[in-house]
Length: 57
Image 1: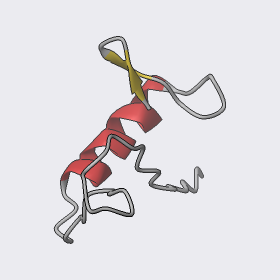
Image 2: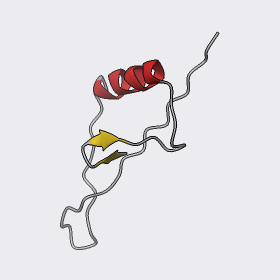
Image 3: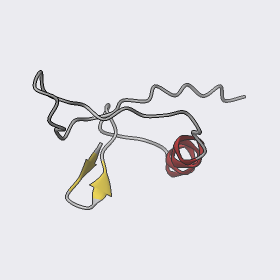
Image 4: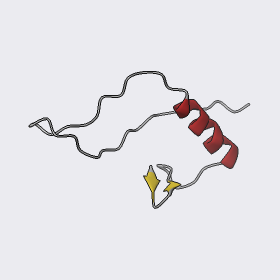
C-alpha cells in the first residue's frame, strides 16, 4: 500500500531487496487495469493488491 508518500507492506515488515524486486515486478505489468467504479459508473479510489511470492534459496 502507498500511504503518506511511502509503500506499506501487508505484514508490516519486509527485506529491502525483496521490496525493490516487488516494485520492479509490479512496474512491468502490461495488463489492462480497469478503474474501480460505483454502481453509477463514477470512478473511486481503491487499493490494488498484487500478491507476489518469492522463493529464497
